[in-house]
Image 1 (tube, rainbow, N blue to C red):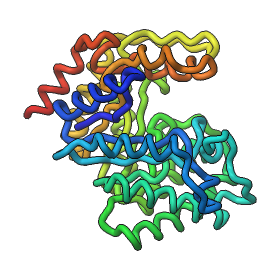
Image 2 (cartoon, one colour):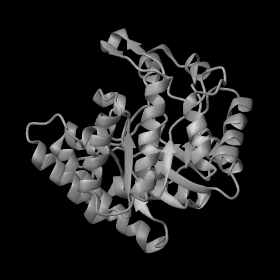
Image 3 (cartoon, rainbow, N blue to C red):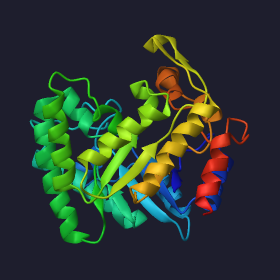
Length: 327
């Protein structure tokens, strides 16, 4: 049971407090590297951006002793439609996602991070079924790319369990023309290629509010997966969410959040999940205030999902977390 290192605030003291909370209330944690990829440096064998080096080194310095580490790395951009951007906002030119230039650069990126973090588990691309929803062509190219990357990593680091994360909210009952074919494709991909099923799940994205609805998604997952299951990022709203620009209004409260966490942990126990990562331990209003205007709305989606609110006040879900953690 653990958390990602997403901080509730922008200051170094806020980041330190986040790591301290994780140390006391978890036995595993995740580092997500999903902001930028220094493509130009990897492709041209040039100097890495100092912003990238400093970010990685600062996280490595905060490595929590006696805790397992999940390293999750994103190949794809925020809406999972193309490659993640470089630090100058560009992406490499390519004719196909599986171009050798892309493969070699991304392998260098992953190897650099593996050597820095020495993770216990590695997610080599995040929320990849979303790409299939965006482009069947890119999905086919992606599968070839990842097969090559996976084999190269396995040859050098055979003992690291590898996965690529899948969004359960768009695997279960997906909004596609042929659900049966989509589900079969994703299920086969997971079971045939990955060491563990790495699940990303945000029930409120699917309009789920009740225990019975949560459980239906879990039952679907268990019926589709034949390999070990891990929840690499998940959370649920503890407050109402209103975003006018998205025409979005979702009702929730601390009781609903608690019910989701209870359902999650019960399934984790009954199905012997490898681990569960709750995305942010505390509401990040303080960090959100620093977001550029163009990112404020999307950043609000997960803002109020912590086991503590923005003031650090414990929610009922934290009591459940501690009870299970201490068993």
